[in-house]
Length: 487
Length: 140
Image (cartoon, rainbow over all chains, first blue to last red; front, top):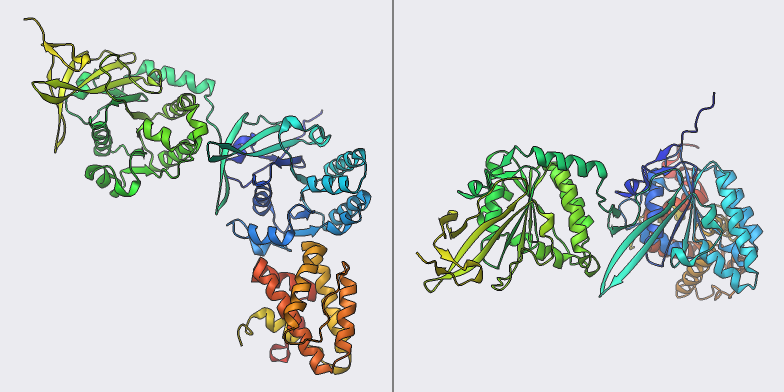
């Protein structure tokens, strides 16, 4: 009987990376970490190394010319994962500059082989082989020599019964035709994308033999703790199906916390629905969203809010900050202006899981779009779609607010064309009645459910939103200047 | 004294050659052990730049320390150091070498941290205990 080889998967120790790799790093694989200068290659390698290395699972790290080893040690120490105790005991650094200066590839190879033999490591890193390449070009050696070297190194590395990594500078996957790319079992590509003054780091698993890696580019961030990857949300077929069945079942409803609104929605908002609340500035969107969270808190359903309109320190209103203080509502810290949707989604999911939340508020999509790096703004609709799909698949009921200035000549529900994403839509707008600005709201859509078609006046009072009479005697409300209909 | 209670400084002090006649040999021996270890981690270039800087700084106290030649080979630099030390009285040579070692490791520690520096020195010179002074000798 033949048994299939079972390839052990090593946890990379980089948050989010294992998801990208399709489980982890295959043991004894030969991997390439490539990217432009400053893209985080060495940091990634170090983080993996410090996480995996143990006295009985040792790592050998070869430095070549690339980054002076002194500097590398100096700066890598700043990361939380850098563990002094592991050096020498589980990790050994070896500098190959001497061999390389003499311009002899065979000596470099021999030295690497000898060190590997002597130390018997389970992990081997060579940083950075591009500098090997360049130093050789200067020495007037032929390129074929170099390719032979890299190939030999690759082959040697495969035979060491070690998980190996080559770290090198490359510009783009397409531009390279080096034989290592063929030999490598895994290729991790790191890049920094500039778009209108903002920089976004991205990682791509170009290749990972024998594993279903997550395709495409995924954002990552380098902080004091090291690298964190935010796998791009990909709508799973199965998820889409379950959420559809959930929706058709749609019997369970979530009360909104605003008196009268549940009736308008046909008995509350169905569980797992996403509701888009559209209205001009000051129309009471955040208040309605707060009531939604407060109602959840009252019923023991914690909520999470991603608030982009104000900084978290000056929280939106007293009622909301009270909910946050008592721990019934979690706030997503929306940091800089270079967020990616996936990062926000990651933070949301983390907090949802931790708080076992049932309700999510995104206030507002307009603020969210602003907080994103410009690069992501362009694909805002698509990313939002993935995000909403992911959250609803978790069974969350979502309320998203969207600011939309009143246009009295056309009827629009969202500046992003994202209305189709929402299972339900509520529109708020200003109308002029008897020389006063009044607020009106209406339920435009509740997918698969009856709902009120009324346009009703509402007021914002100290106690929250009070929904008033139906404006049935008026006509032309959407024009902003309703007239009393003919009686 | 600024930092002489640092364990690293104490290690260096404790390595002072016990016999006065072979100060230079003992000093070079220490340097060679350390150089091997440091070069294997940070490369020759790293070692050379640290060494040149240390000699420059130590010259303000011991002007007779040779201005480092631009020799790329650490063993030539150390041979040069040996010649310098041999030209001095043992006490003088010993003091100069200790200052040079302390300066060198100070720079290294400033760059890569005390902890990593000490662990590199320990792997070069063996454990603390092996060289510890009679104050704490358990192995005698």
